[in-house]
Length: 122
Length: 366
Image (cartoon, rainbow over all chains, first blue to last red; front, side, top):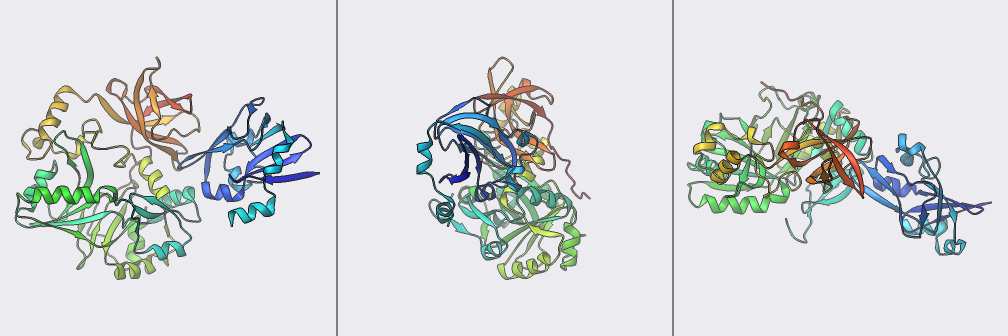
C-alpha cells in the first residue's frame, strides 16, 4: 500500500512502509524548464525537514529542493547524473530524486494529498 | 531602470498567444521561454531562425551638424570615418574609462546616426547624451518602435520570403529601408541575422508573414542569454559594468588605435593609464569540468585557494553540449587552458580558462 503526499514547494513524497521516495512535481519541472544537472546527495546523509537535499539546475538557474520530512537518505537516483532531463520527461516516475528512511511519520500529516495539491497550484 | 513600473511590450498579446512564460528583465515584462523550452529554442536558432522581441532595447536617432562630434566625445569612435550604412560596436565611458553601456552605432547619413542601447541603461544613456549634447549642435530623438531580431542561418531566406530584400546588407551594416524603419545585419547570437525597428502596425504585418514560415519561431530571453554566452558576447550589467574598462573586458578591438592617443572621447586619459600599466584583470571564457554549471557571482580561486576572480555569466551551452561561463581572472591566469576553481555551494569545481567564443560566429561578411 503506497500513499503519495505533496508539499507547497512542489515536491511529491511516495511512502512505502518506512521509506519515502521524493521528487518534484510535473508543475515544478515545467516551471524550471530543461534540466541540465542534478546535484545529488550521498547515501546516509541525515536530513532535517527544510534542509536543501538536492539542487536541480536548468539552463538558466539553480533551484533548491528541500527535505519535506526528517530522515536519512538511503539512495539517490544515479541515473540523473547522466540523464538529468529525465526529471522533465518523467517527474513523478523515473525522474525521482532520492529515497529516505522516514524518521518521524507524524510529519506526513501536515502535507497535502493530490487533490489538495491540485487546488494549491490552481 | 524604471523603478516600480513594469513596462509591457507592445506585442505582449502575440507572445501570450504563443504560450510565453513571462518574467521581469530591466524593468520590462519579457517572454522568458515559449512552450518548446529554452533548449529547443536555442538549437532552433542555430539551425533555422529564431525570432526575438527586443522592443525593450532603445533606439536613439542623433542628427545635426554636430552629431558626429557628439558621438566622438561620447564614444571611443571616429564617427566621421564611418561609411554611410556602417555599424560599429562601441561604448559610453566614464572619465575613469568605466563602461556605462555598450552600444551599436550606425551611420545613416552625413549628419544622421542610429544608436541602439540596452534596456536597463536607456534612461541613463539618454540623460548622458543630452548632457553632452549641450556643447554640440545635435538633436537626440528617442524612437518609439517595435524592435525585432531575426537570427539564424535561414534568416535572410525567411525575410526574403516575407518580402524584405537583404542582399544590400552585410554583417555590421544598417540602413532605413523605408520611413520610420531601421534595419541592420547584426545580432546577439553569433549567427547571421537582422534587427529591425519599425512602427507597431508594420511589425504586426511583417510578423504575420514571418510566423507563417515554419523555419521561424519565437525565442525567449532565456535562450537569448545562452546563445549570446556561447557566442562570447557581453551582457552589460553582468560581464561589463561601470567598474570595468574596455582593456580588462577584452574589448579594445572596438577602439580605433589612433584614437587611444588623441581621441576626443571621455575616459581617454584613464584608459591610456590602464593600458600603460597593464590591465590587472581580464575577461575570459570559462569551461567547467563535468556537467555542473558555474553561474554568475561564483568566486574563482587558483590552485593555492587564493581568490583570483569571479564568474560574471554562466549556464549551460545547448550547442556546446557543456556548461559555459565567462568572468574575470587576474591577468597572469588569463591564458586559455589555465586551470582555476569555482566555488559552487562550498565545493571547488575545476574550471579551465577557455577561448571565446564557445561556438563559432557565422556572420555574413562582405
